[in-house]
Length: 164
Image (cartoon, rainbow, N blue to C red; front, top):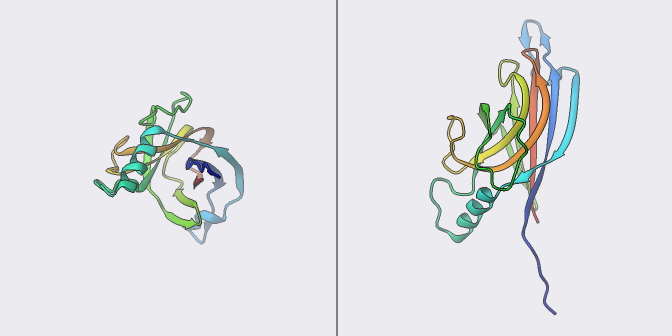
């Protein structure tokens, strides 16, 4: 009996916007009231899949297959499998926390009150040769969102990527 097991990366992102919270003149970013929280499925794009395939082959270059940055943008263009960048990237940051449990990799990025403010319409995970420069590196996963983040809010994006 032949068993067909298809390895297909997929994911979802939990988006949490909180009010900034000040205690004794110091910011305690995680303690503010939750203003919005949603979990949205994302598109794992073709170039990200290609990067993982290259990493599996053992021909590793430019940190092939490794996700390092999370970025947000303002474009309302829907995510497609053919995407290689965000359409209008406005801010990116190194992944804050990463973990793995079984076949699920989690990437969490925390944006302070001073970072990524505006009407956010897209976000993505970048890796390989990604740097702090907008749209550098390989796009792995892209998500359409519609959230407003002000200078009095924090934002946490927590991506779960399942290889299954």
